[in-house]
Length: 385
Image 1 (cartoon, rainbow, N blue to C red):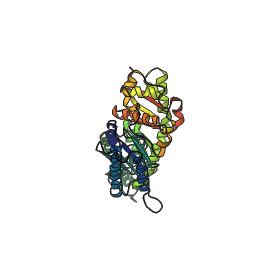
Image 2 (image 1 turned 90 degrees about the vertical axis):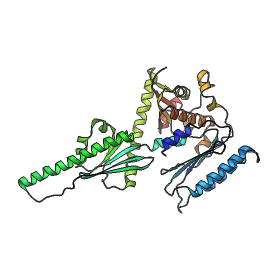
Image 3 (image 1 turned 120 degrees about the horizontal axis):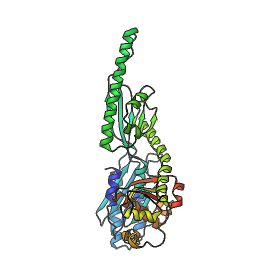
Image 4 (image 1 turned 135 degrees about the vertical axis):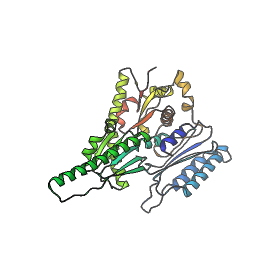
């Protein structure tokens, strides 16, 4: 199941009067090739469980959650996983696991009345879905990448040509045949790419190849496909998958850093014009509650998000009563959450949750200074009220 699918499932979990565990683990091995998270899990979960009376229902639930989490980590973590997220609640029969090829920066544990989704949503934003075209004149590979790895791969085979030592008219005629073969191959590549983009919902493409094939590919791309091209890279058609992931992801992140300023300026401009834009946590949460938000912009650091200003009133208070109420249990946490105001943690989760529930695109802004004047949150809107 993709991160997007799991986010959607977890966003639908109702607030619980019983503890919900959200656990994020960096599963990268140490210098001896061993995992480094088991001691953290046992120590932190036992410490949290110990804050409840020994025979309380909450204590029993957390003890059972710890046992189930430990069993899973002992037996079910894939060797390739560099990050693991687990969401558990014994009372709600909730046990969702996410295993990731990409690393989670640091271990973190949150216990509250809903799943802590902000870190998972940020990971989804950092590792987007896109296509890579590794072009050659006779064999081209098209790869769909998401979550930091290759999801699918297609190879398009053309006619393999070779040089000839003939001269004169024979050489010219042979060269025309070769060029026709190359052209037909690239046309087939473009037709395949068109179908793949539509079927997979791709919006960004990275192309790679040498100086002979890239001009031909540019000529044959349709305008919609050409508009999706993010970058051109000097990768060979037979490049290893690991190299493709590394180089194309770097290109996607470079694009993201360039577009962060553009999307923020677009939202701020729409807000200034009194149109389809809002800024600040209060107005953005209200717009999400109303289902107005097209794209949610949220800073990529919890510490740079402002809490709601004052006491919400009217519809905002009613719509977000569950989100803003006191937690069912002590939400102490490790990792970034430990240094963040718990009201901000709950607000960030509510923004992500409502964005997921209403189909808003969620865009994390890595440069915190861009949204700092607006409390770390802004949005573009589908319509005005």
